[in-house]
Length: 458
Image (cartoon, rainbow, N blue to C red; front, side, top):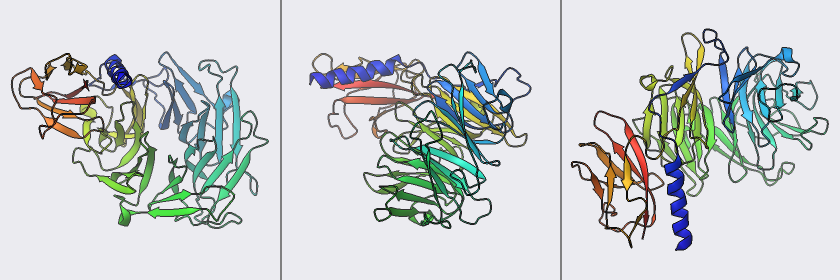
């Protein structure tokens, strides 16, 4: 009981320490010239530092105090153009992958963002018949728990050559001992059974299997076991006939609970390994149909960038908040999203489709407990100390006040009344709730929906 009590108190303390959620997105000027913003193609976070790969302007980094811009002229980056994929590995190294002339660049900035003097660069370049990239376009990248890297490729010649690349860096300080493997449907010895040669997304799930998302034919899950042994391989293919909302797979995200979220260009779905089942998110509150980027925050909320704005969802797929240009986004097409799990800040790249310009947006604090002036009292509530009720203070008259468990499942909607709203610590069937942390969702009349957390200890 003591251990449970300490855990619950720690969770509540953590929640109450979060910054208040911002209701409006802010724009952050990239570099120093607000009138000449680079076109950004992808984004990733290294801690709280934002890294951006550009179409024609190299690599950008921002730590809140200022920007650094890496260009080919600095002597490190191979090329300034078409950085399709931005990736930060477990060592904190920054990767930029692109198309012609077929390179991936890796930056070790030695932890000094604003100094280029100690930067170390590594280039991985196309070599016909050699042990590097055999393809013109690298759209995606992921990392295994052992530190191996996978690259998802598109064969511009559509000859089914090199669908994915596998890299083992034995010594990250050199490329001389790197081990490369090419996998495709055409070139021996690694002839396999990929469904297509246009890969747009790759991810490693908690079981170690490689997820491969194709531009038009769904996805493969390749449980390869020993990478050099074919007899233990297990292949599973999913498409619109087996649970996906569309065959046009654009992005993956593996959440902390093991679910694999799949963004397609016509809907959102997730796979639950515990149930071996697919769920399609059909919540009409989703602001768009094209799912362009996915990440999760420290509270377990799933953040999705779409062609109609940003959505935050509970792990069960219920939309809990949406944001559009009415909430400060520079535009509604959000093609990259990244979550700072320490500060709670949500970073988003929004695209002006007509002008082909990009804006960097940030929502300070995300959806944090105690957003607005709503809070529960007492918190934590203890059965041996307090009467059997928790007041939801600050919920305006006419609000819809809902109690959810930590997974996002609704357990009680409180009766509409004048404030303060009171929760008697029972669920909708009148049964006593279990000890734990609960989310209070307050839909204010004519105002934003806000959240807080309360702990119940019996």
